[in-house]
Length: 325
Image 1 (tube, rainbow, N blue to C red):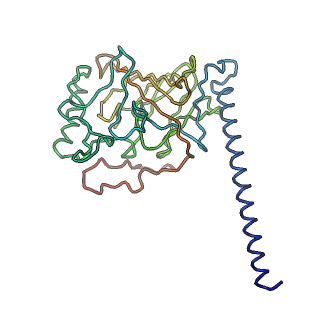
Image 2: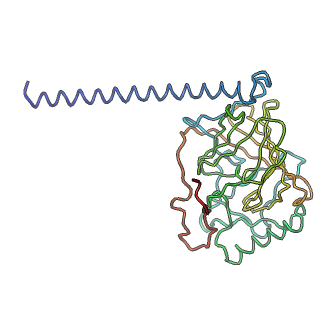
Image 3: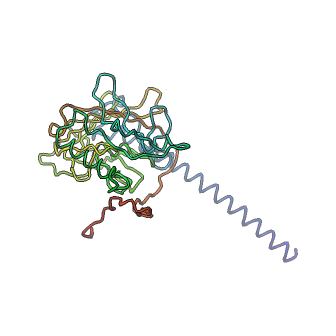
């Protein structure tokens, strides 16, 4: 065999070995994903409430995500992926719904763009009679900042790398979120791909005696007739709003969320109840819906390449004043 023939033979052998290694690697990955998915589903069924005997498998909904393969992406009422401008869906009939846009300033979101039609800022209806006086005035001033040109764009928490609070974080549209069980802490994590924002739900029936206000507050949960019911208090008022219209709240905000799968198992729905006697004259209700999206977890760092390129006087990105270590 000539040197040239030997070289070509070795080259083909290496190519075959590389292909074989790739196939084996892919097989190992698929097996790992299957094992991971099985482990997650088993874990949630057995450990989500700390005791397999505490709740039956019928109580535990099967919407725990596998970050290796799929997550939940928010959708509109027509089933298409939600975009900027797609806010809360209407609640069940007979219940008071969320704040909407001011009638003098119709909102045109990304889905409404077209020839001669541009996206407009979210200007909330501060005249809604559900708002107490201070809350209405805060919304009016926020609107005025945008309408006067002081701010080129209104504040939208997750776009400016702030946590979206509760329930506002549920409105994020661009990247998926995941439900992850945490047997070690007897809870469930809600994990957003953007900045790995994490909300912890502790599967217990009582709140702490003294809850310090924070971005996501203190959430406790339980499984009830196939629903995950989450009760949240202790929400900070700093840069925290219920929606894209910057509807404010007080530290008395009490949020109850009910997550469940649709009958066909293809969609996730949440009905949210808002109670805040210092900000609203009555409770508000709103809903949101998600679909499964097959994709793996991807790291997303919000602060990277997120400067004010068009001089809109955007709200500055959050910065830590002291290091964490």
